Image 1 (cartoon, rainbow, N blue to C red):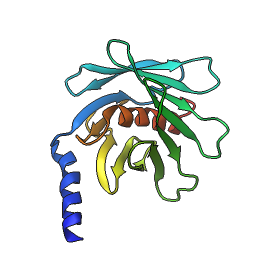
Image 2: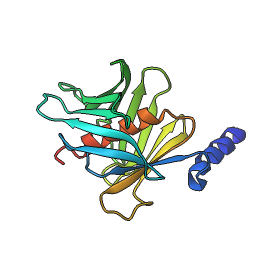
Image 3: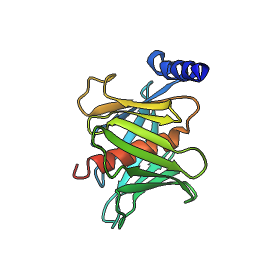
Length: 182
């Protein structure tokens, strides 16, 4: 039990020191319908383009690589009790579903149910872009504004053992659901 706690603390501390962590830069409230924007790495290179689709019955965002090849699609799931968005891969296969908790008295809580892999939990202040994504108590990603001085920008730090495209697509989904009118 103590060894497991020590291992978890060591893994989570990697985010504080940047060990094996990749940092991406995203724009706050940038996922308004019809808005296109880039996700950049910490070197400032474009890594993914988010293409918001307009005039659709469902909120839809295509995530593309710099050459324009689709990596993922994030799409709302209407007629659900809980607000949710599905993440599909380039071939249209379901990768994950992002859902908001129905009742969350203290903090924002979300889940990312992966088709192949453990479910992820999201906790923190989603509205202010200050939250973590964890798998079994181990932090795999952290979303924060603390590294950026530009008003409409926030960072997504992702650890080495996470699928970066899925985590970034989940951040797009969470941002879209948390800021639906933006």
